[in-house]
Image (tube, rainbow, N blue to C red; front, side, top):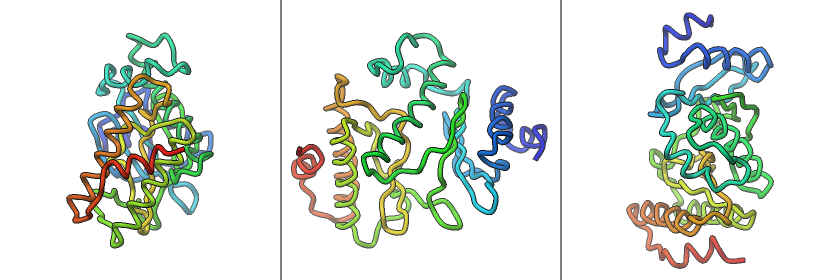
Length: 231
């Protein structure tokens, strides 16, 4: 697909983003963008062809991002200092941060997509799913809810033991991959040393608790939290 045709079809990218996409293509990370998985306020998610398979391209829209929200998560992370007011650099750091956080999560044994590459405002990831991307938990309630919940809590605990909290975990950020959870969206994932880490833990646990309670499980939020945070 040519740059002009792609821009006409989707009408979401500026020239800088198009050049970044083509840079990643030229580096061999994928062959070309294929079809949208979701079009959000801040990022557009596409499948991309890679030989006979597919990967995911997550593309942040440079003029539509909530820079203040991003900076609020990133400002205490020592890896990203002196970014206040630098909007474009905040987005680039946000993308790099997701790549690095996914690597940390994988090292801890958390089920996440494998990060492949990033450049500027574009992140390339393993596609979770078979022929199509796996659905989000909110759209695909598991058949064995107890087993699925246990697996979520186990993954949260592994992340906690590695010194991190997801900080935005919900049925929107968990995929149901053949009845197994996969965590996604790791840009806001934060070290436990940050001042808001307890708030993030409480919120993540509450979001998961509320979802499974809504779907009929008798779940104790304090027991859930204990499973996540116990040494």
